[in-house]
Image (cartoon, rainbow, N blue to C red; front, top):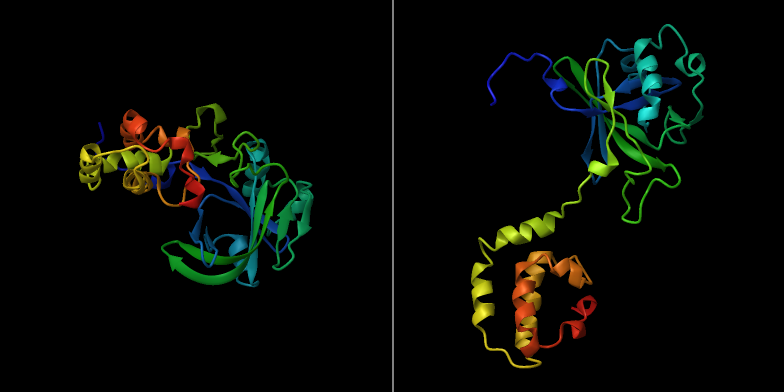
Length: 263
């Protein structure tokens, strides 16, 4: 069971993605970084004033964010083990890169994705400073984005930092797709749509009854969401309302004749 403890390094209690931040011709691994806004597209990195990267950020108007894979864990550890004050990391570790187009930074050739960020705001929080960047350019490696427009977990093994020099990655075979709209639709049965279900069950139905079809469409939309169009029979099979309709479809308009893309 959970109990209160003294845990000073609270940030080690959860895994963190690691990225290499590029400022001018220097790179630094950062685990404290996050998207902050979709519109405008803002990205934040937290940097200690002890770091050489902090000095560089104060002398330039932007930075880059490079996302590497688990196979690059050794490189990330190496770049974090020395300071840019003492050596040229790009030369020392033979890192291939290209110059960013719109900011002073580098885009690493081995990255599967990268951002160019113009400096947007800077704010101190405790012992770190939050540098907020406005993303002006995105880079994606060929073949890593799937048909749904997201990174394919079978093509990329992202690097994750688990604290105390421990690096891990994901196991694609353990990934589960759980639709939020589908799970939410089931919960709605216990709330606002229960009345609609009762009305649907008790409403008279005749073959080709337009009212029945419209009511069905309305209820199904409330479960599946208006943004899903067309909705396949497989998608609807998870919805309890669909199962009610299936039992009655002999006396209703045939399911195949409802063109969801036109509703």
